[in-house]
Length: 315
Image (cartoon, rainbow, N blue to C red; front, side, top):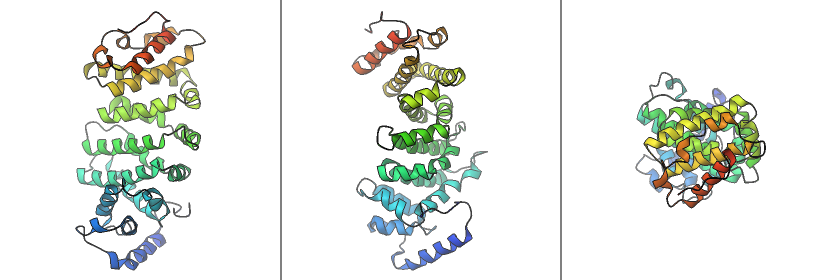
């Protein structure tokens, strides 16, 4: 990880070196109207110029689907990760109380989107975790009421974590360990409980993926308090979904309950757990949106069997 400084917060020598790098590429300095024609390699070099960085990040995001090597290019180019982290931490002081403008939020979201590009790539995903880069995004996960600029930051940060949450690939166990070690689950539960609909959905997906892993399930059921804090948050999600149904979110919640119910599959039902499984999952509340979703209906049957026994057949 030689391309990362020891700390992204202060290094005057590094800043000086970056100025030299920027001037050495003066022949490709362009105004914002000319950047669209540059290659990803040229654009990445221009990230060192703070005056152009906002537009350069936007142009790189536009090229993320056509440039297969963008993730390693970002990671391996000298100090690019550092420059992106500077964008992220530059707004920390505006989080509480929230004073972030939409323009500032969009700029940081663009930096986060480039981290998401790296999170999706198997090679750079490993590097991000080993450098503990996602920890810099955690401050954005804290609920902040109805503040749209922060909500966009939160949603984009969750998108990065969601891209990292590929636990079935060769490096997946290390990612899972990092998530559990840095307490991603409590942060996601806060988002599920208190944030906007899209953030709730992505946070639920992350928790669902964690619960589907044996080590993740062990972590979540290590203490009754931890286990039932998850159950209670999911219960409240179902109450919200009764008012505004969403099939995809409902499927995530059902899978979470299904994973949690596996704890009692062999030791017998728990009255405390039974009381906190929403009855709306088994009555006709979601009948219409589940009508053609046979996979989710099957999951409900298994969930009911784990909780109550086999006498259940959804209409």
